[in-house]
Image 1 (tube, rainbow, N blue to C red):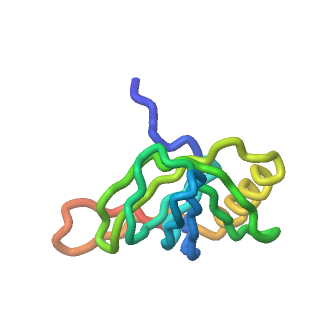
Image 2 (image 1 turned 45 degrees about the vertical axis):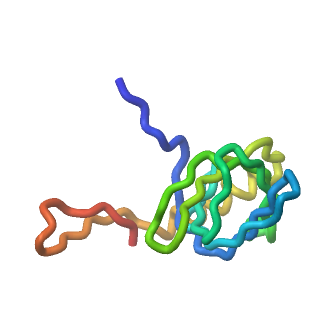
Length: 127
């Protein structure tokens, strides 16, 4: 039996993001793609080595919350480089704020299938 990679639902999160490297080697600026209770996906112009610890501030419903994470994947995407950040050691208040934010957004997003001429099968998407 195979286990799915995703352990929590993801929602679109199109906010400006500043990642501060904890090792003091600078900052990365990018745009959020999606957010879950366990991590964040962003697009930025600069690469960051896998395993790099970073700090960022997430704009949630109750205001900004600071989270610590680690870069777990770097991929080439059309607009730059995609970084996957896995959160580490979240405080209980941050976990609650993330859960509330995600639950609120999930109620606003509906799964859909999009059919496009010339494409063999419907595409999964959210509306």
